[in-house]
Image (cartoon, rainbow, N blue to C red; front, side, top):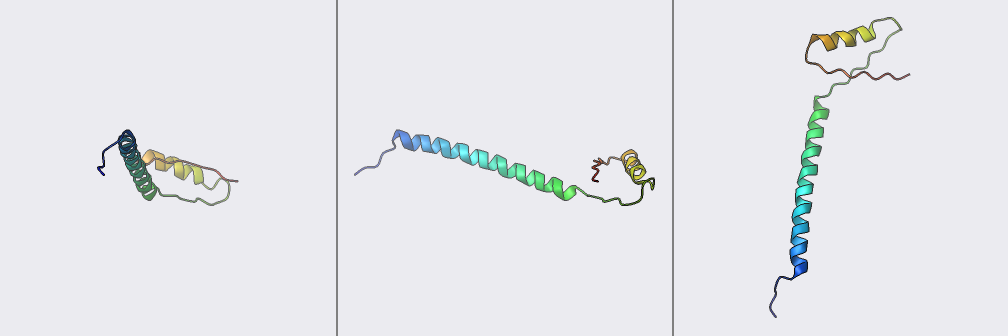
Length: 74
């Protein structure tokens, strides 16, 4: 009883290679997102109205290479 490669074996090998490639792409994307999350700093500014919260954010934008994303919650 000899074993020989049939057409389905070749197809499964190709699919396996495609799945491995896609898996590697997904893993690298997840690692990149995890690194971005580690670099992100969240600051909660509390205070009364007209206390300068938005002024601090504007100054942080002007000071350097800091990307500031403001989100307001009521």
